[in-house]
Amino acid sequence: MSKQGDAAYAYFMKGYNCSQSVTAAFAQQLGMTEEMALRLSAGFGAGIGRMREVCGAFCGVVTVIGWVYADPADPTDKSRIYALVQEAAELYRQRNGGGSIVCRELLAKAGVKPSAGAQAQARDASYYSKRPCPELCRICADLCVEFLASHPEGRHCGPIEL
Image 1 (tube, helix red, strand yellow):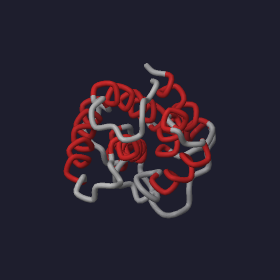
Image 2 (cartoon, rainbow, N blue to C red):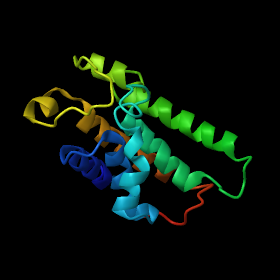
Image 3 (spheres, helix red, strand yellow):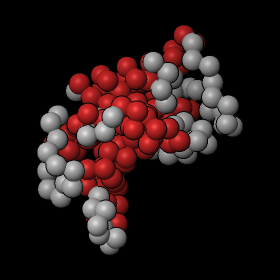
């Protein structure tokens, strides 16, 4: 486990969504303020806007990968970034026990009936006791730490201390 994994778990337990939790855990290392990270990732929670599509925690991974590896001066850089994201997605599938990157599938595997709609659920003890989300945030942040360490080439945001 990493300090970013612990931080992502703690952010989620404070009430932030899964994407915010993972992204904010890396804010300092990425040269962002906490507020920037929380704003940037706010819409990706609960499977992107609570639509239960791609896991919000994994969206946090994608946000970090984009920030670290994308070359904003090169509009043809997309294929390289897509390959990195697909590699990270495969690692996430292997680690999360569900073999998926889809929010509703990960919730269903944990026995949670995923609801959709724009209204976020109240965070109480019952909510936290049923959700795999805090641990998925930890898994994604730990995955990010390992991914960044194993892919030092092609970074565009300067050195990262992990």
